[in-house]
Image 1 (cartoon, rainbow, N blue to C red):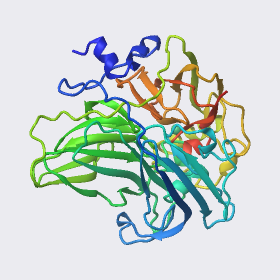
Image 2 (cartoon, rainbow, N blue to C red; image 1 turned 60 degrees about the horizontal axis):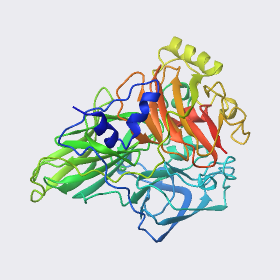
Image 3 (cartoon, rainbow, N blue to C red; image 1 turned 90 degrees about the vertical axis):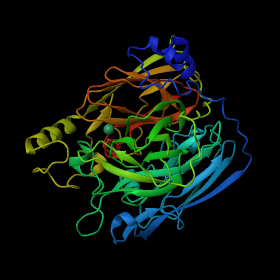
Length: 498
Ligand SMILES: [Cu+2]
């Protein structure tokens, strides 16, 4: 039985806050054999400056998952279609982004997803910086304050730029209380490839007004199934990234015990993995106790009707560990704990616009909402810039283009504690992302959720989810759906911390 004292200790005091909220917290799947607390806070020991050169350009690439075809990917690096940047906590990252994209007017920028950085480094065109136009460059310079599994992507025409590949991983090390026996990184995403071997439209009315335009080819690390060899009988860390623009996954492990040790890069007291639902942009750090020599564990997405194997972990060598599986916890993050009793409450209602309702009704009449075949207008019949399907608190941005800034959704007092209630009034799931702050997911009115830190949270149809944070980072910070077609058709806004 989990006592109140342990609950508070385990969640770093966060669970206790939930009494002030309207939704019930829960601790899903605790295992008494597992540590109930986190390690001491990570110490920023890094002193290095990590110089990163990113050149956004078209690079024809034949990933293994393309089945022999070469596609005109847009990527950041000649060396790797998906650069992986590793640094230590305390290191400074200095990035020079050059825009050499092949289309006139193709602005870009880099958003450092999940990093609590100064506002001017956040990479949102018009809101925090001018867009970086073709032929120009921009420098980002910051010291990430947290360890964990983060990533970066562009924040301009994201649906196409991410759809063509523009992203990279950013791993900030220094969070392990004792070293695991190995590490595997899994980046999962779809590719929208047509019968002619080229890209399909990245934004469709059908997808944007419903659950998104899914890829036709799934991939992990560029392959249909990622394959890794891992030490046998060992505790191996697996960092799972959902880099897709649309797909929601339910990640599980077959053939081995596994525990969740971090969500969105930030440590949680380890708990057994049954399955964990990950929307676009969400990350999950697992520890897997690998099988004996020759055995294979698989990482699986159980959400589709036919489960999809994402990766195989083949164990090799002498058994590393003889004790029962009880993975070492990660170090706690130094994130301010909101005062729930004093917190101000905000409500963000996620809704369709009138256009969205009309298209939704037309889609339903045409035979289905979830990408079925119907008599809908084809993609690109309507101009993206004046097209909105979705809104937050009845406001849709970019109703008149990204460069026309609406007023902020709310103005927050710097240092104040806030509880944000996300209310989904729609028929679709929305992964809601807040920039510049790592919030605490307090709970849901509808499903058990462990209290945990996150930067992106799924809100199911008709669900209410509460998150809380201290508004300790001044500036204008995006709040948006990370189902990119929803973002691009209205479900975005921003908070002002002043
Ligand atoms: Cu959405």
